[in-house]
Length: 299
Length: 315
Image (cartoon, rainbow over all chains, first blue to last red; front, side):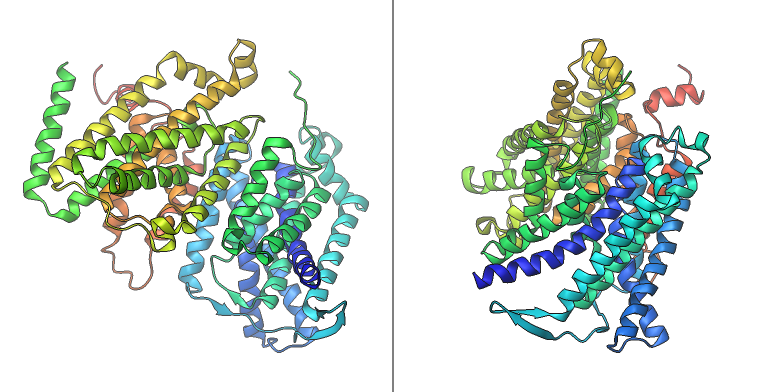
C-alpha cells in the first residue's frame, strides 16, 4: 500500500509535467490544426537556456530567488524561440496544405536536435541544483519531497494563470474565437497572426517551465531529452482529446500515473511502449479522446 | 519492348562495371541506394497518392528485416538462394502488420495515421529491445548475405524494378485514380461512391508490403540489424526522400533516394573536424524545400512527363 502511494505521488508529479507540455501541443492543434513536432525541442531548449543563463549570470546556487530567476529566464528564452520558429518556419506555410506544415515541423525538430548536438555537445550536462531537495515530512509512511511539492505548486500556478488568460482576458477570448472560426475572426477586428503568435508564446513558456522543473528533479540534460517527454505529452494530448485544454491536463495526469504504475510493478523496460499502447486503444475505442468533440462536416 | 531492352542492357553494363571496376564501398552504396529507393516508393504510395501521412515506415521495415533474418537463420538453415523467399515472407508479414495498423487509423479524418504509425514504430522497437531471443538491444548478428556482389545486385535491381513498375502502374490504374480523387477532395470522392476507409486501407497494406520487402533486403545487405537501426530518424529520412522527389512522383522518389544516399557520403570528406554537418543538412533541405518548392522536385508528374513539359526532350 505504501508503495502504491509512492508511485501515485511520483506519477502525479510527472503527470503534471506532461500536462504542461501537452497543453502546448493541444493549443497549437486547436488553433492551427497542425501537430507541432518542434514543441519537444522547445522544451529541450528551455532546459539548455536555463543552464547557460544560470552559468552566465551566476545564479546556479540553490536558493528560492535563483529558482525564480531560472524559471523566468527559461520562460523568456522559450517564448522568443517559440515566437521565431512560428514566424520563420510556419507562417510562410499558413495557406499551404496541412501536410507541408507537418513536414516543416519535423524538419525544425530535427534541426534543433542536431544543431543542439553540434552547439551544446552530445554528452549529457549536469543541471545546477537551483533548489536543495529535502525530505520535508512523512505522510502514511512515505516521504514527501520538497521538489515534488514545488512541481505541484508551480504547475498548478501555471495552469491557473493559463485558464485565467484563456477565460477572462481579451486575448484569451480572441484565441478561442480563432480556434473555432479562423475565417470569421478578421471581420471582428482580430488579428489572426498576432493571436497565433500569442498561442505559440504561451505554449512555449509552459514547456520552458516544465523543462526547468524536470531538470531540477533529474539533473541530466542532453539535446535529445525532448524526444521521450514530447512523445508522451503528445499522447497525453490525444488521450484527453486534442484541442481541448482540460483534456490535456487530465490526459497528462492519467498518463503520468499509468507510467509510474507500470514502472513500479515490474515491466519497466516496456515503459516507452505503454503510452503508445494506450494511444492505439484510445483511437480504437474513443477516437476523439476523453474530452474531444467530433466535428460534423457541412458541405 | 525497345525501352525494356535498353533498360536491361544498361543495368547489365552497370552491374559488370560495378562488379569488376569498383571497390566494395561503392558497391555497398549502390545497394543501399536501391533499398532507400524501395522505401521511398513504398511511402510514396500511401503519402503521395493517398495523402495519408505515415511516420512509422521504419517500424514496418523493422518487421520485415527481423522476419527475413529469423526465417533464413532458423527455418531455412542459412541457404543464400532462399533469400528471395524470406524477403517475400518479410513483405507479407509487414503487410499483415500494416493491415492491423490500418484498422484503428482510418476511422477518423486527419492526421491519425501519422500518430498511429508513429506509435506502432515505437512499440515494435520496444518489443524488439525486450526480445532476448533475437539479441534484444545487442542486435541480431550473423544474418546470411549473398556470397557475391553480382547476385545481390541482380536480386535488388530486379526487386527495385518490380516495385517501381508496380507503383508506376498503380498510379495510373483505376485504383490510383481513386486514391487521387480522395487526395483532392474526399467528400466529393465519397459522394461518387468511393469507400474511403477501404481504399485508404488497401493503399496502406500495399505500402506496408513494399516497406517489408525493403526491410528484408536491408537485413541481408548488412548482415546485422538492431532495434536502433529502425528509429524515428529512419522514418523521417524515408519521408524526406519521398517529399524531395515530389509526393506522387515515382521516378522522383528514386532520384531523391539517389541524391540523398550520395550526398551524406560526399559530405563525409568535408573538412569540418568534429562537427557532423550531415545531420544539419537534411533538416535544412526539408524546411527550405517546404518553403520554396513545397511540391518537391517533380511535383506529381514523372520524370519523362516533366522533361516533356519543360521541352527538354521531344515527345
